[in-house]
Length: 93
Ligand code: HEC
Image (cartoon, rainbow, N blue to C red; front, side, top):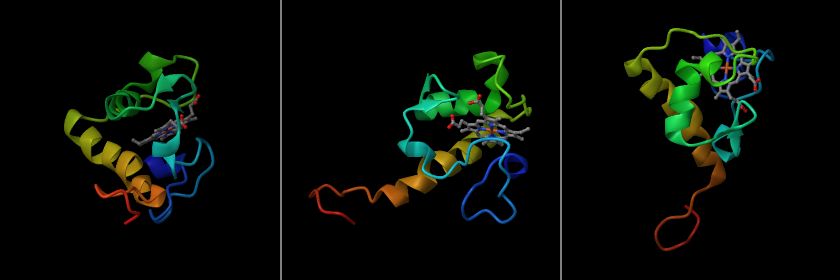
């Protein structure tokens, strides 16, 4: 359902342009323009974008507490691999 409005690299059919593309979302500072991009805020945004910003164009989708954990794992963690995180020794994986 997210693919109806967002481009999500690696998700077949998710290439729409209504919302911003969700690749490298983890590297962005703010969600919806002003919400700090933390995992908790990401879950809040996905469940209640209208409560956070009634003027934004992303609708309330009725995402359940269980689903949001799975969904937030996609935008929050998938792009992390693109950021090439360093391991504990400080070398790039
Ligand atoms: C009806 C279209 C629509 C659907 C469906 C939709 N979104 Fe959105 N989404 C938007 C729009 C439009 C924005 C930009 C809102 C703004 O910043 O004003 C947005 C913003 C976002 C953002 C913040 C992006 C940023 O850079 O600030 C995330 C994360 C997000 N959506 C995730 C999802 C997820 C996950 C789903 C599926 C559960 C989903 N969206 C379904 C339209 C949609």
